[in-house]
Length: 242
Image (cartoon, rainbow, N blue to C red; front, top):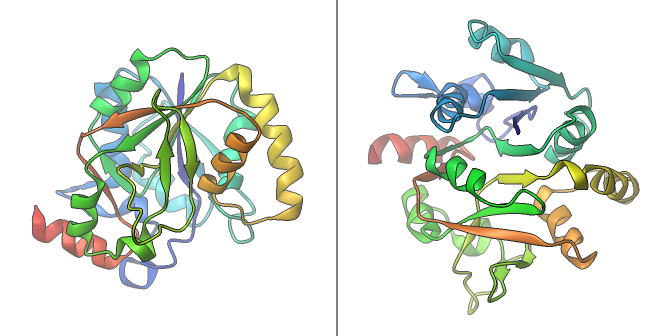
């Protein structure tokens, strides 16, 4: 299994404050990306890749002492959304792939739980504690959260739509997705077709599309530590709470 961190974006909501990609935010003397790589070591995941784009040299410079990382460059980071980095991972890595955002902080137990499951279908950790996280982040769930529904066997039924006020979801997407090697070709084919209609497709919209095409996406409920750094307020709120 190869874990792939998506770190190509411009970090536009926070860049003016930090002047670097979000994955280089310092949390207790370590950058986010260093903490995420440490998670891999704890979970015994040895194959690590990073999709870079904006200010890629800064990320490589920070991680220059870690020789085992493979880098892939997203030359279209200015034109397309994160889904294009997802596609590059599928296209370039001949292995089971564990996709992870690089602007999130989470416990390595989440990775261990993924490793325990069967690897013949898409796996999606979902956050049971998300309302408390949104409270710490001081976010309005109706504006910032997304819908997420599962069936009684924990398979995904819907994701990525606007939350309705009287229908608050029990779980939330965590920015971590496992894709088995046997599904890569099909996903690449679907993305190529859909990206012609929508060049800035979000990953959750793509997952919702897969559901409609009858792909099985098994959800793994998680109560482990998780936090997202979307803007500078998230960073400040995290520091104040820790």
